[in-house]
Image 1 (tube, rainbow over the protein chains, first blue to last red):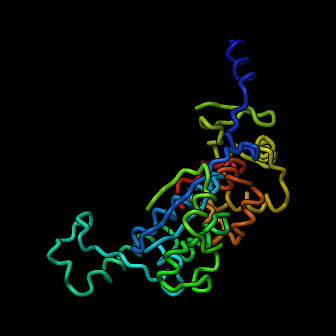
Image 2 (cartoon, rainbow over the protein chains, first blue to last red):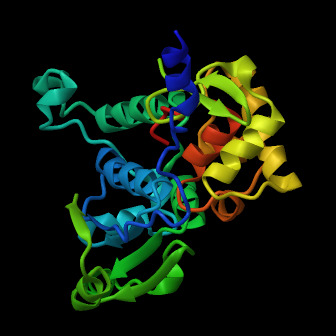
Image 3 (cartoon, one colour):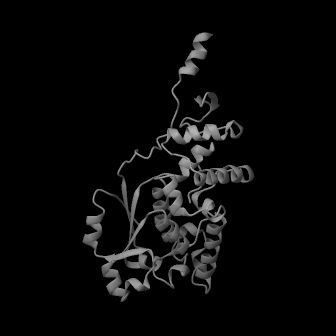
Length: 175
Length: 104
């Protein structure tokens, strides 16, 4: 009897590993190369989740991924169901006018219903959480885009080598 | 379910040490939890913790950082200052609530 209560009294306090000094030095590089609405979210969600776990996050926007950070476009990403069997919409219906608009509207609603922000607000959340956003030099040159055309939280337009250098030791996610 | 002793009273916790009984929480216990993860509570910390408690009572789930900033009116950057590195988990821990399960 006494032994059981002693066990409880002497049980060590369980403390989750949340201490400030519990720094893993973990770093994550997320390369966003797509401009579709459905392909914008994986990077945003993973980046934000990593920041919430104390991971240093660098996001690199390249090629079509520029759509996610270009002012005037980032709010209007589209979900194109054409050629995507996972939508379960008969492929014969795909060429119908308005299909992309309808699918985009539906997807935006599903995302909003989960209380997940749209792309610009998501980027606000990521930068406020300490995430770093970088734009690809070559993509900027191809699109004749300058830093002024990009979301204000983008820290710079850098070349691939600079991004690789900056993410030394990082785990990489390519989307 | 394990129990642990926090500031002299036995409380129920999950495997990671998060409290599991809403009503076993009080400020004394919260201060002890905060100290355990090296956070010194200020008025600003308390305002956030009380928002979490109140919101959980109504919503039945721990608010995410986005909800804390959008609904509670707190600043995201400031949350990372008050509860460094892992704000959502640290707040939930001190507030005696489960970890938030939303992705965003």
